[in-house]
Length: 125
Image (cartoon, rainbow, N blue to C red):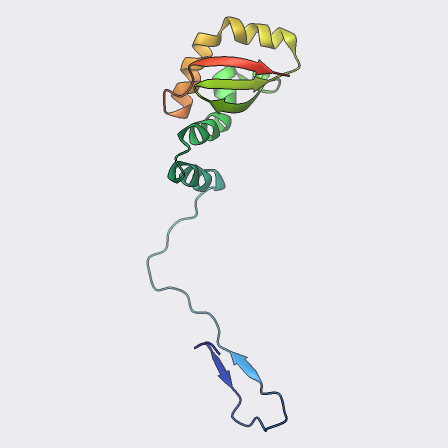
């Protein structure tokens, strides 16, 4: 029985004793403001040594700023591995535009990610 539980002293031998649970108490420490799920996940990825994973998460949050809203609707950043940003798009015209602007997009992606994580851009699918 835990410290927050007490048994009914009137319990008899063959009767099941009644367990009364005490309400949970709030901690007395200072309150912290809530954090977004993305910031919590970014912290977890960093603690696991996943700097590329954290960079990709930040990049996804700001993807529309990196490639522009019209392109962002047609191109999705899938993976960042060994400095290669892997994108997915079925629109060949947008793929061509991004290939021609790859250096500029990589620079904007690094600025958005807060790290020099993107060295090249490639497509899947």
